[in-house]
Image (cartoon, rainbow, N blue to C red; front, side, top):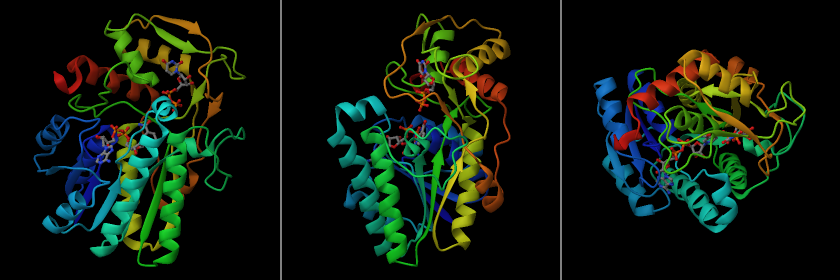
Length: 337
Ligand code: NAD
Ligand code: UDP
């Protein structure tokens, strides 16, 4: 059984590659390396003792995909490939729609031509928009607040329509909450280029002294300490969620959507203080104005994934903080060493 991971050299993709290889399936990666290093897959190979061949190419390019599908017998696909920076998507919407939607459309066309019908798609909790009722359930109405979110919303719709029109498809849509942390070896992890946008990589950079302090965006939200609350999920739990989704896809035709979160919300200050405690290191911070577009609270109802996929997150906030720092400490410059 061979699984194609589009965008598989990236953060979530490389951790998922490791889990899939350890489960006994084969992996092939297609990545244009726009936000990843091939070193991630070299390390996955070292950790698992198995090959994860990388085809450097674009998922929106039919020839690149044809090459993969003719060279390998692909049984299943996990579609991670996409641009993911919310702020950049507001500044460059056409680039986001072009890349993320073309990647999904071209992939589905080539899969259909090659008789491959199992696909797991990386969606996001961002498709729930500004709904205030928590926890978020898969049945809630959707709506987005930025072009990145709309590319996920539209890709979900494209996948749903495709599944409806062609009953041979087995489609699983996964809505991730806030993936953080790294593999416990500290050999692979999140390696953002430039100044990180997301909270955990920013905290890691402050802890190592590359950035002076964390700006906590707002302490006047209606939450227990006034700072934003999110459903942080360990990236290895998320990776294991993909294994469960692939097994589900093997057996079930049609389209199904699942939240992948822990079901527990922690605040920005919870994360900062847990990081300090677990790693015995100071994270200087100051309170700054709210970041435009942020919501107060966001956490999942993960019960559908538990019931239907037999998956639930196992790792704690302490594990997330310890593993994120372990990766950062061992690799102060990420994959650039
Ligand atoms: P990432 O940027 O590390 O990984 C995405 C990978 O896709 C990168 O390796 C990049 O080089 C590649 N890529 C982008 N466009 C491509 C294209 N056209 N062809 C081939 N490769 C391409 O991001 P990640 O955090 O691993 O996220 C993986 C997926 O999960 C993305 O679709 C992202 O939108 C989604 N997601 C991420 C988060 C998060 O917080 N990290 C949350 C929800 C959803
Ligand atoms: N956040 C923050 N400072 C930062 C980055 C993020 O206070 O430098 C807060 C942000 O306002 C939100 C939470 O941390 O409440 C998670 O933000 P992140 O960008 O990691 O993920 P999001 O939930 O926005 O996808």
